[in-house]
Image (tube, rainbow, N blue to C red; front, side):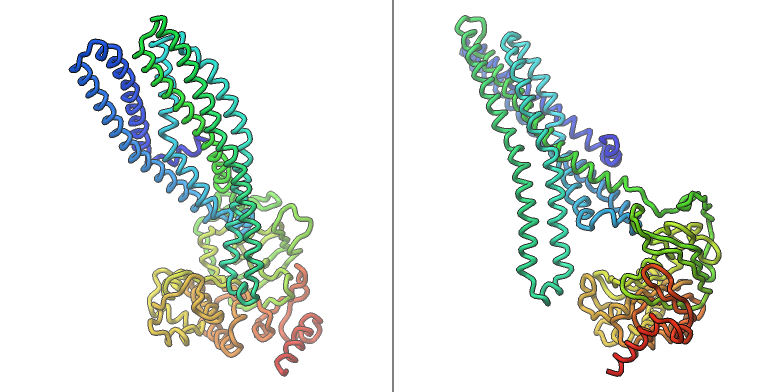
Length: 587
């Protein structure tokens, strides 16, 4: 595990090494101070040699100042190494998440990914910033100080042989309890973040249904669970200090008892005992540091495992020199292959979101849509209309069968080109904080104002943009909350048009637009993009009755395909939808 994370120090090895050197040098100068103090007591004080005392005292001050400067240098370089490590790790995680397919993202909740990108990385970042000193200083000071105690009095140093195993037992007991608790604590934090995120996203729904009390109760429940989990973890973590203080003070009492008897019997000098006690305190402080390191590592290991789950998540949809179908058939990726026409063919396609699920979402789908044609897709809620079109740009991978564009399996195209050649306006419209212009440029970053207005004209977005004081430079709030649902949909359509795709997919993307505006959009699309293949998912008959063919989906199967008149003549599902909507329109 450590080897995996070491690579993220690649740009920060120098400050990391310098910080470690500073800690070692700082420890050396601190080890010299007790020797100088022992000399003052055993040599300067008995001889009443003021100059000797002042010289040794000045040397102690110099050592202390140098140690202080080295400590400050460590803090500087250690923070650079720690913060840099955190930034590199967070960037690697974010890059990996950007490569995820929809099915990969389905494996994690959004709140869990946010926690792993922020809180878990911060835990490791703080472990580096605050851990370099104890990791380096603790073992070094413990070994060096123990050697000094052996030099001063070998017999008295044997007391540590009894103290260290006791400390080890205390530490083992605490860490054994802490490990699982830290994992539970991070999972509880995921639930807190998820509850907050859901509430903030759906705040308008919460307000409109007057469910603030329910939301407060739901948050109180997950927050209380997180508090209890944290209290349990930190209860055991807090035992570290009293356990070590018990052993530390017991050790000091034993040393004072035996050392005092040695001084009385003249087998040890007072200065030696004083210096010995100083080294004892340094050893015990080092042990305390080491125990804190182990507790910090216990929590860090939990965060490491959660981060590695993100980094090691296998990408199920990606480019490769050779890609394989679910049945094991190899498909060679063809470099330079481009979507030129926009023919779409489904050959016996089966699909389910979870490979272990007992039932398929789509079953034995076969269809063909010629280049430049328009297909409408109708069906009840949950009939897998969206699932069907998401297989075309490989947002999900077909479980069985083949999806072809221009006669080539979609796996043979590079993902970048395939998705660039397909414009998708999803069911859930998303706009980003920034200006209207910045949002539209997602479709084509080099588009001119003329091209932007061309797309807006087709999407009928120019009607309201022209009335805005700042036009295209009007700033949108996060999620586009300062524009209406219909305006948001039209901006999303314009953004997709700027890609000038060979295939356009509208997933119920005009549901918030009035029928007159929708009709104008439809006629503009037919006039300006006659060679673009169009797929329209809708609940309105009027949105798709002009299509070259209409697909009726029923519970993951194709019920029937035909034109408006053909389906109206003999398809029961289409007839029911048509007459219910016609009756509603008259009413």
